[in-house]
Length: 611
Image (cartoon, rainbow, N blue to C red; front, side):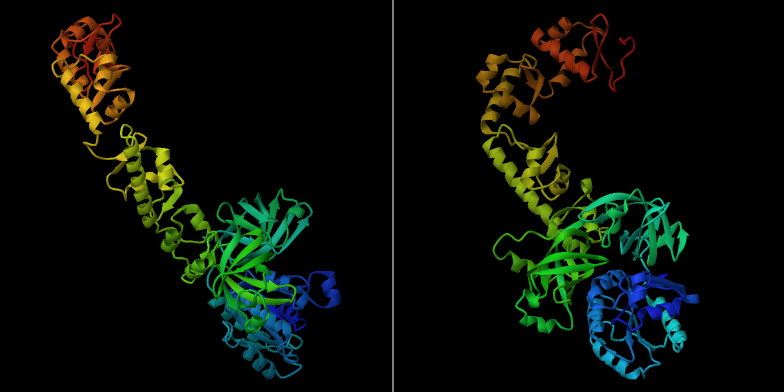
């Protein structure tokens, strides 16, 4: 299916044309029928045979209902631009054209109606003049008379060709269905309708319903498309969605059904302006960039939200929205001045998470940056601008993330940002080591803060760009040897001298003080792998445990702590915690009677060993 909207001046025969094509009544409200003109959106559809089904969104043409017209045209890919032969191009024809161009609609049909009342050539020439220079300049034209039926077959053929050349929708796209109607069906509950531009909707899906400044989880209870129940709907299509457990008052036009977690609620956006035919006249209005007033209304999909305009560059502005909207980079929308009832500009969204502009000159720098951006985001450039960003958030902005590499903890890090963070981290480690050489390196959390990273899991990714730094044992430190402070090297040499002839005669507390080895110094030597802390106050040189095993191997299969003390030439103060250390590390076993036995290499006890 494809969905096409009508557009054109009031009472130029849009609804009559849809009725002639479909045999359905698009004007569903009694007030519309009484007044003879459309005041809300109408819907109808028909089968074009080999070209498939096509649905029509019939929009009002009166200037008081342009907001409604924009709600109908916003999500559709093509238009039937209707001009009456007996009246020709009119004011609302021009505003509707401005809206279509602003929204990026690039295809459709120019339909000259009421051709039985006047030759269509004059109206056609007039319309072509106004279409010149717009993306719709080359669309095919058809002259018809709904009263006599003349041209109807040609119009259906032209519609078939239009439907065939429209691009196929992306079935894998995230769902964003702008709600254009909401009502209650007895026995079913709340129903919303809209044009599904891409993605899939299925019965049972859990979605987010955004609107009114908030969002809530909802479940799809049922679906209809072209008036019939379906289990699944794919874009592009008109759908009615029955929502479970949602009161009617919770849903309004301008809300949106969204794939859960895939869209960002946006209140500040940087955008590029696209001028309308009347932009040149705006220079004299005394407003902001290009004559834009500071307050306008942003129209996208069926939503209409007040926006404050801040000029940035020649064709870029920042918009601050009164209510959040689910927007992405590349979205097309309209800025309209409701006071003057004019479409003032089209926009393309360039950034939905723009930086704050706090410093002098920040706006000019931002304008220069925006000048390099367009509707097709560059993933590498977006990552470079942001430095560090969650992969899911970048995807929700509308940026392709497939080629951006690994994401530790769900985070993406730009290589240049990683290198800068690594330099900052190295400087912080070196500064810390100079201030406190006995406690080298930074704890993980302190290292994260020093590198300016949002998550400690990013440290390893940053350290890949920092040769000489290592992250181990909960610290980031210089991966080097011989880095002990001179005073500590002297104390270590004196300790080695004390233990040279009696490697297991651990010095007592008084001797440690004489050697200059207090608790902090000993902790530094333990971290450096130079000494072995057997117990509190009992320290030996690194490797003493292995030397003890070699010495104990000369004892009988079973030995006591006293025999071990004598074999090692030490005191009970040392041998008891040393034997406990050997047992904890699996190099000895101890029986119920307190006797010890060495394990064989590989951890297997020799024959006759104690269990």
